[in-house]
Image (cartoon, rainbow, N blue to C red):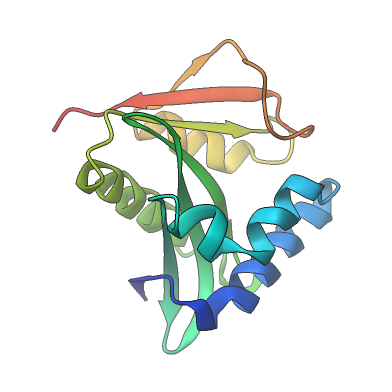
Length: 153
């Protein structure tokens, strides 16, 4: 398994993996589809990044960094294909995303998640140093937890 940068040819995989995990426990929202249908315009063109976990030539995981504010990126669209779970791919993606956030000169990584459907991910975020803060106005109806990681370069 290796991590690679997003290229437009991977958009169908980026959407497929994310829709599958969202639809399993939640409702796919319009805000999800806006980003998944146009990751080049909604993420890349605004200075964000998308990282993909690859096994051979197959995309098995995704993770995006969206520009949220000056010096702040939002960790989003982190998902691993159901067939590839349990191999530590989420951890590798998250670590790569934190490193990319540093390369983007971010001083903070923030995220929204859900305590019921994403317990494994939340445990990983805590292990990597993310701290839970009060939930501000959020982009996703399914979000019930907000976390931040202060970056020290």
